[in-house]
Image (cartoon, rainbow, N blue to C red; front, side, top):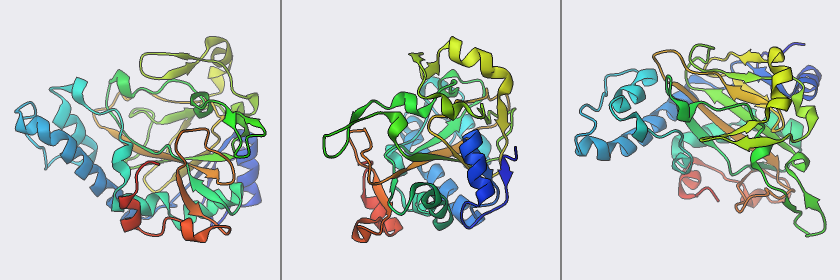
Length: 293
């Protein structure tokens, strides 16, 4: 089965067959350098804001402005790794993130799967994966394992995470390779339903009886900046350990059929709509004024 596809305007039959059979598809060169540079600038701004109080207190002696993007975060926090953020979520309402989350080509892909009503699901994250740092080592899990059941909008039917029509999106800001902690997928596991997970110190993990017989089927998700990975919220996936000397920066976000509930206390943001076009988030300024609601 071919996992890697060239840049599409929409999902072709081959793309869809791969996504439906394997639970994911990797699309090359979807995002342009202007979009990526805008996101990197915002990540640097977020890091500056977070690290500022440590710099003022003398806990971080050097702001490391001359360090490259894939090293600066590590250099900033190497003397106080326990204080390093594992991820950024609420901070992502910045103008430079709008072209990523509302990228027309990415939304075209989402619409190909979900239909014309597309919501940016209220779960979007930037992840600076540090070398040999357990709090950023994501274990084998399904994203659906984090979602509780709930009622549909009419209160007539109980819905579970397996009922949600969603597509997950993942994209790196630096090359993602096995040595710096690229993701791993187990193809086809999105067809198994939501399996049991156990709570670990930092993340959920799929129980041994479900994951161990399938580990030999795992594939590395090797990507470059500009590539976009679409995958099912039911797919077994994890992040490899980062054994390099750089930070693996990536972002992940999700789109959902906006006619469904989120099964979360917040609703997310409308990205495409024929029914309610006036509610769609239109521009970077509007995005920056919103919250993760």
